[in-house]
Length: 402
Image (cartoon, rainbow, N blue to C red):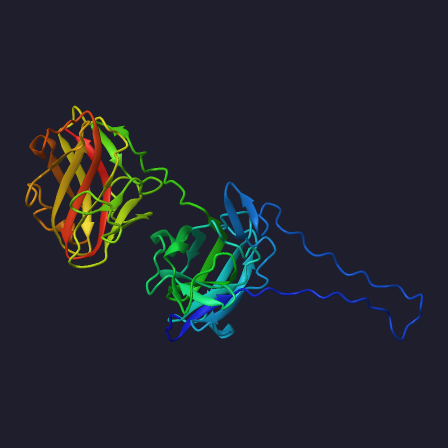
C-alpha cells in the first residue's frame, strides 16, 4: 500500500436503512399522528448513480447528495478531521446536472482521500475512470486507489499518479482527470474489476476547496476532437498517425521485423503537454536500458507516391541516440531502411532527448533496400527505431510531406 504521512483520503461507505413500525405511547389512542415533512426533491437533471448512457456508467453525479462519502488517510483509516465533504446544489462548476461535491481541506499541507463504496461494483469491461475537478487551491496531482476482490486488495496509480490534473483544474473551471484501470499497481494480490469494494480519490494540493462531479467509467478513451483522424490531409501533409482515439496500429518489433512485445509497450497519452497535433500522443516505454526495438505497423494509407519525406515528432525522458525508419513495400515486402546509423539523427539541439518535441525527418528517396526496390505506391509496413537508454518516448504527428 502506498504510504505518505499527513495525507488524507475521503471514503464512501454504503449506509443501510432500517424501517420500524412506531406506535404512539402514553397518549390517546385517537391522537393525531404527526406527518413527517417530505424530503427535498432530487435534482432532476443529475444522473442517478449507476446510470448508463452512451457506453458510460455514471458511478455518481451527486444527485442524492454525498451520503456514504467519508475521509481517510493513506492507510485507509478514518480521518474526518483532515477534510469535510458536502453536496453543493446548483453549483456553477457542476458538469453533470446541478449538483457537485465540495471537499474542504483543513490545512495547507494536508492531502486527502475522499472515499466511497460504489453501488456499481462490477467494473469489468471498463478501462477508464474519469472525474471532473476544479479547485480554489492548486492541485499538484490526483491519484486513484481501489480495494477489490475477496481479499480487499489495495491497488493505486503509483507515486505521482498517471493522470495529472489539467492546469485549468487549479483555477475556476472543471477539468477531466482520467485514470487507466489497466495501469493500477497492486499490493498483495490483483485488481478484480468484477468486485470493486471501495474507491478513493486523492487530491494533493495546497489546501482550499475542491469541486468534484460526474465520476464515471468508460470502456475506451473518448476521441479528442482536435486530433485529426489517421489518414487526414492537412495542407500539403498527409497525417498517418495523430493518435486521436488510440495507438493502433503501433506495436513492438525487433530489428528483423518480428513481433517483440517485451522490447517496448505503446500506450495512449491523452491531453499530453508534448502533443504537437491535437491533444493526444503515443507513449512508448522501453523497459531496459540495453533494449532497442522498432515500433510500427500497417499504415492507414498505403500509397505514399508523391511524398518525399516521412516525419515524426519525438521526445524522450531517456536520450535518443538516433531514430531510424524501415519500410516493407511491394508484392515482395521488400525491406528498405536507412542503413547503419540512420542518416537522420534526432534534433541537433538535443531537444528530442529532453522535455521538448523535435521533428525527425527521413528522406524516402534515400532509403537503402535489400533484394528489391522501394514501392511508394504500396507500403505494407513501416517501423520507427529509437535507440536510447531505456525510458519513455513520446511520439506524435507521424506524417508524409514534400
